[in-house]
Length: 164
View 1 (cartoon, rainbow, N blue to C red):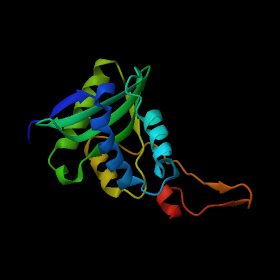
View 2: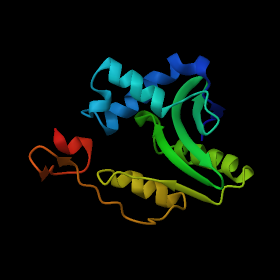
View 3: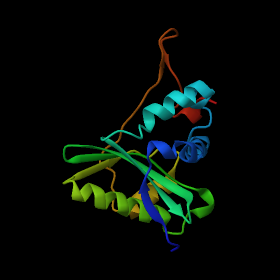
View 4: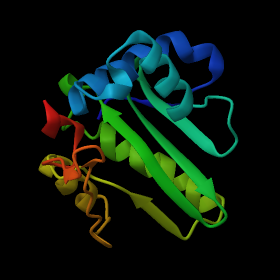
């Protein structure tokens, strides 16, 4: 595997980090309301990636100074939750994702974390395979129904991509 540096994303990195996040959003939820306008993207970015936070930690992998992926996780007591994870498509299947996960787990281990949670979208079987290869297993199923309260019916689907 190529040499990757695992570094915390700090507020001064925001202008370099943001395009990586936007590429991630375009891949997983191109039609979501949260990313359809510049204002909604700004708001969602600020909420999802609080780069000065002590609870949410955002790290990226850099190869020769260029971003190749990132992982974001939050820690509360002895539990962690991986919120976002992305590897640049052209760099996948080269061990970068495994490196990012192992590096993040080293941090959680050093902080006494005894459980790490994450969600995988049902329309992403490759992600499920990846996380299972990292030692994660399905712990529960979460079922979702989005509703139209005016029409009093449920929308078909549970992902933003279902409503295109």
